[in-house]
Image (cartoon, rainbow, N blue to C red; front, side, top):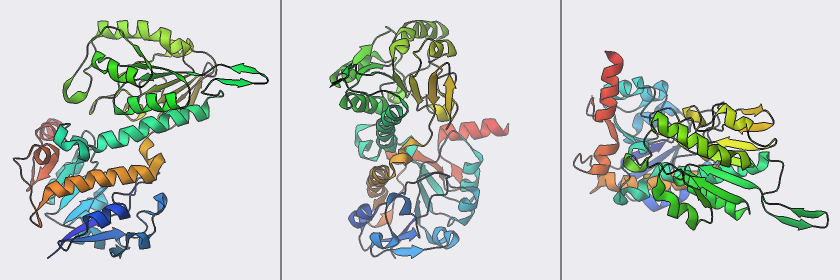
Length: 377
């Protein structure tokens, strides 16, 4: 009997992405797999039900999830959706593993094997499944466009009959995937760009994109490609040096985030007050509280002539390509998970084991298990 793969319509407010796009469905199609899509799931990114071809279109969420051997989602399921999941089935998606931990007790109770795309190990073998990176690259690109839209200036230098207009100056804080894409996008738009990160190892990458690296001589490499938290002394040194670069920027894009922890506060109120009137901060770390002291999620704050915008769920703003890239991440994960026409949860595989949170009626992921035990004690 074919494995039933089901894709519900996302219910998060403002979400435009869909977990599978028609092209990926075609590439995955084989006799051992049967696809079921909730009616209207792809409409917000331009896909009608008929675009999915020969798949089952199901209107009712309970009917869809109740037959799924594998459910593919973008956002974490709601409690109502968890209640509708087929017992013993597989769930794959962004599960926000460091928040709303009660969700995992519910999944455990339903014997669901839940895989979190955020927990895919950042190893070379898993690059094609790395949804964090694919979506972060979109966020970095879009953040610069958002900044350009808010800024009352041109990005490139222009020579006109009315005189020469100087290029805008852009500072990108954090040179991970999102930051590097932001740097590249700002450079393509003609801005003078600086990039800053507490990891000196990324200096070469920043400079290769045509930006100047802001070096504060602090080494803060952490595990998994992320930066570690700075000490109080390091934070003071960071802010003293960075304040000078913040003051000259027309647009700042901040991307520094630590999974499972509040976003590091890098831009203080005093630093904002040292910026030029009309300058803009686009804070991609808003969901974690923001890199700027004044950031408010999904709000544009005006302070002393400076606009601070903290958008959330930015990849959804580029819903078509974000869905395409995410669907390809899922496709590559499914090709690892499904072996010999069967679902094979191989706990010896680093990718499978590392991203698995609940399995066989228990909490498999040690970190989540520890958090749950701490919350209940």
